[in-house]
Each structure stands twice: as C-alpha cells, then as structure tokens.
Length: 286
Length: 190
Image (tube, rainbow over all chains, first blue to last red; front, top):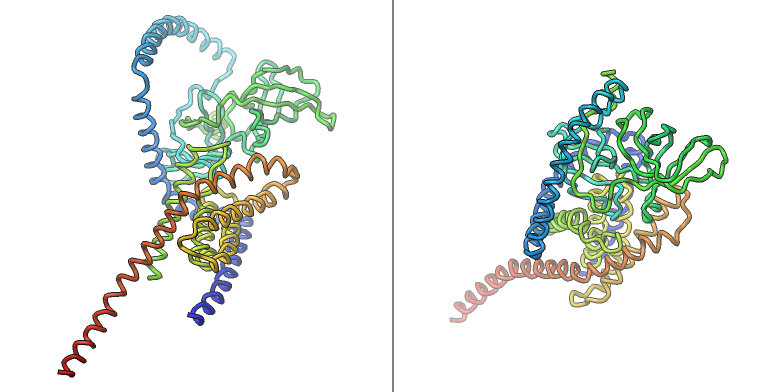
C-alpha cells in the first residue's frame, strides 16, 4: 500500500507538469496560428451540437407542455382579443400594401436599396450559451449544411444581434454586439452622422452599450435611431442597432460619446434570423 | 479497471458540459450559471486524488476552450491547475463525509474566478475588482456550491457503486480458489 502511494504521487506530479506544458504550448500555438487549431474546434463542436440540439428540443417541449396547463379561460379571452386584433390588422395591412408600392417606387428613385429587407434569411434556434452566464457569445443550430458562412449578420425582430464568427457542420458561433470585443460602425438615422458602437458587458447590466467617435459638430439627440452604416465591411447597411441616450463630450474633447439601448432583448433571445447576404457580395453587385 | 474508470469519467465530463451550457443557462440565478465542470473536477480530485483531478480539469478546460474560448489552452491550464490543487484534499477523503467537499468545491470556484479576473479583466486594464466580485464571483461561488450539494452526492454515489461492483467482480475468483484448496485438503484428510 505504501509503495503504491509513493508511485502515485510521483506520477501525478509528472502528469501535472506534462499537462501544463501542453497547455502553455497550445496557448502559444493558438495565439500565433489561429487557423491551425480551427479543425479541432470544429470537430469538438460537431460532437456536442447534436446532444445540445436534443436538450434544447426537449427543453422547449417541456415548456410547451407546461404552457398547456395554463388557464383555459385566459386562453379563450386571449383568443377573442387576438381575433379582433387580426381583423384590425387585416385592414391596416391593406392600407400598408398600397403604401408599400408607393414606397418601393420612391426607393427606386432614391436608390436607397434596403438590402436587409430583401435578403434571404434563415431562422435558427440558440442551443447553447457562454458557460459564464453572460450573453456575449452563443451557438445556433444552423451551420455549413444550411449555407451559413463566417461574417454573416444575425438579426432578431429586425434589429442587429451580432455576427457569425465560427462555423461547423451544423452549428455556428455568434458574437453579439454587446460583447466587449465587438465594435460596429453605425450612423444616426435622421442625420447620417457616423459613430462606432462598442460592446460593454459591464454597462449592459444597466441595459446600455457604448457609442463612441461621434463628431463634435454632429447634431444628435436622445432616442435617435442608430443603424449600421455604409462604411462597414462586415455589416449590411441599414439594420437597426438601437437607440442613443446620454450624449456627452468625450474626455479627450475631440468627439462625443453616448450610451445606446440595443433594440434586441439579449437575455430572452431564443430564435434569431441569419441574413444570407454577405457584405462583400453586395459590393460585387454594385 | 483503469479503462472503465476513464470511460465513466469522460461520460461524466460530457454530461457536465451539456448541463452547464444547455440546461443551466436556462436556469440562471442572478445572471450566473453554476460551474458544473468545476464541481466535477473538484469532486473527482477530492475522491481520486491529484492525478485524476489534473486530467479531468485538463479535459474540462479543453472542451470549454474548443467551444467558447478564444485561445485554446487557457481554460485547460486554469482547470488543470485547480484540479491538481484540489487533489491535495484527497488525503482526508471519506466517502461518508458530506461537509468538506463543499468547501473544496467552493474554494476551487473562488480561486478559478479570481484567476479568471486576473487573466480576462485585470490584464485588460479593468481594475474594478469590487464590481467583478459582486456581479460574478460571489453569485457564481454560491450558486455552484448550492448545485454541488446535489451533484457531489451523485458523483460520490456513482463512484461508490463502481468500486463495489469492481470488488464483487474480483471477490468470487478468490473464493473459488480458496474453496478448491479446502476441498483438496479435505480429501487428503480423508
């Protein structure tokens, strides 16, 4: 027994040293040659994604079942209300369709091609999130097989969520605009002044992220919309990012900065839309 | 024996990873997810010793690196080191003790988050450790320890069953040899 223990402790020290050397080696390799280890990442992702898909399907199944138990009367009442709303909306839709024809005509004249609205989109479900509990990175259940490639824009409810950073066979990793290392070039809706929208997880606790590099002379006010700009080489132009508040001078006195309330509720995001048009392709067409 | 043990541990790691990224992200409390992989690493280190702790930590960290990390090897280094350190608690391991392991797990999680702060915030120039402690560190440690109250029992139970099974498998062989000897001896006596 005593001899066994002695052997055990010696080998454990050796194993630990060996593992630490491997870790440090891998850190250096992955820092210097990021692409070299990408296949490993993809393989690990491909291994886990089917299981995560299963869990998320079961999870949504259970929550659907739980909802069945909710009050019947409540559902009937809601049904009545919704039927009424549908009728109203049908009316409104008729009017809007007419207006849309007009709008299309004017757009053609103005050449303000809203690429985003006409682009092909794919819906995807979020199957796993950052194990930290933060909402800066998540994995969706669509990948190469569904035609997803790196740098595709991800939206939800017509507003920007983030961008695809890694793609596997049937999964893709999305970095959201609130992540600390994310920065998006934006412009203010009525005035077309440009700015940079930077993610900030700390400020996101209060519901804001940062807007920087606003021109000192720019006439921007609270609650102006911020859209993705024409300058960016990765984000499609004209997607809503959020609403600006708390505009103030930068300590450097060279430009202004502000807070931005994202238009997407990142905490309760479940399904996202991936825009299948890439910014590069767009340049090609023009 | 070694092979079966490794397979069981690998399956446990996979289950822990799935729990952490897919199940507990839906059960967030105070916006944090309990660190199931750390619970597993610390528990196995406490039950089996430094070697298992370091190896389990390495595998857990590697999976995190490959799926959510930017640099491969960073989480692996953290988890491996902490797993190895938790292995020192193996000296006082007792399979009926359900108090000490929670302190081990809590301490491991605390250390992990502290190192995490140094690597990911401090080196970036974010010196606001108070914010990090209140927002992430303490909620994470508390939630992790709470979840570990259930999970450690499961891991320990699993381990006890496994050792008992292995003992049973080995036991009959010895008995047969002994009996045979006895019978032979008995005949000689006759």
